Figure 1 (cartoon, helix red, strand yellow):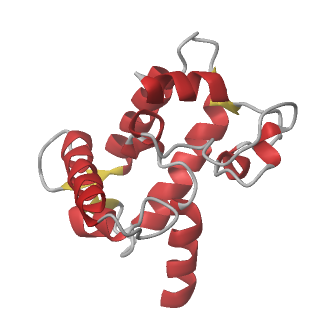
Figure 2: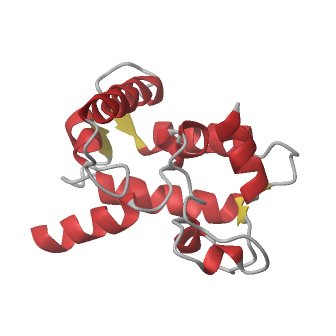
Length: 159
């Protein structure tokens, strides 16, 4: 059971962690994805979220993914994510050699946890997590059409 949960957490963490600032922080869904029709069916993380393979992530697809990520992160199934549960999930394709950058990314991740914890009680409820995911999705959806395409994502990374 524990191994299965670990595999599920790893698989879902490899998707975009919307509430963790995936669009805004630069480890979002289109890293590694190819451009053009069917662009989500490449090796990018968005391929997992883009269920209909139309090259865009809809609000519904993003919400479903955020729910799955929350469930995977909630290791003890108590309906809340603690800082330890949140920090235990890797955010990226590997540990890398740049320890300075890795430390900075972990510090940013810890700060994002604090931002999600709206009531500052040391844990993030599903409602708090989904609210943060929705805010990040809306920020990424720069044209307000209810979908995020690779161009919107990349513009957010370059700012």
